Image 1 (cartoon, rainbow, N blue to C red):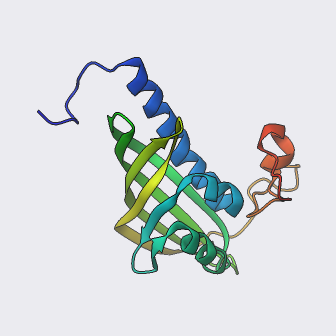
Image 2 (cartoon, rainbow, N blue to C red; image 1 turned 90 degrees about the vertical axis):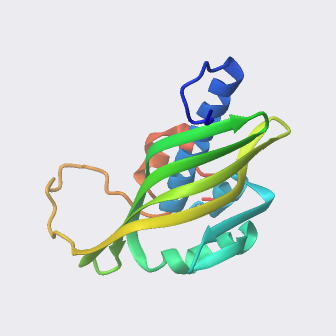
Image 3 (cartoon, one colour; image 1 turned 90 degrees about the horizontal axis):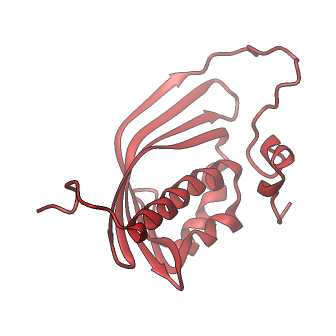
Length: 179
């Protein structure tokens, strides 16, 4: 029987699944806030990231590549839509459906990638991290961006890439240590 079939879930497996959900959600936060130091903590030292054809290799190379690639976008939003995990002791695999939205620097175009991550995770010293992360593109959209401010100047926080995003001021436990 497939490991994906419904089966009784132990407390250990439930805790592992929640830790993995946190891991994949933290990944999107790190990418969108450009928090490369925090992103590095999500991967094991010998991890591989595969965003072929753009980058495939050791995680340190991936993190070194990201700032230049992300400099092309004024804003991004990486969202994990669903997560399906198979846990086997201290190893796990996951298929994460995702939407990655990108706004061009001039605000004129938006690029949306719809896809999935095929992840391998390992728990070492009690902590779950990525061992290998691979992106699979299912569909992409290149669209004009709507212009205008629907909220006026009513004090609504405007999202920004990096340490000056309002989330860091509004959620003290999210404050970056590199800012």
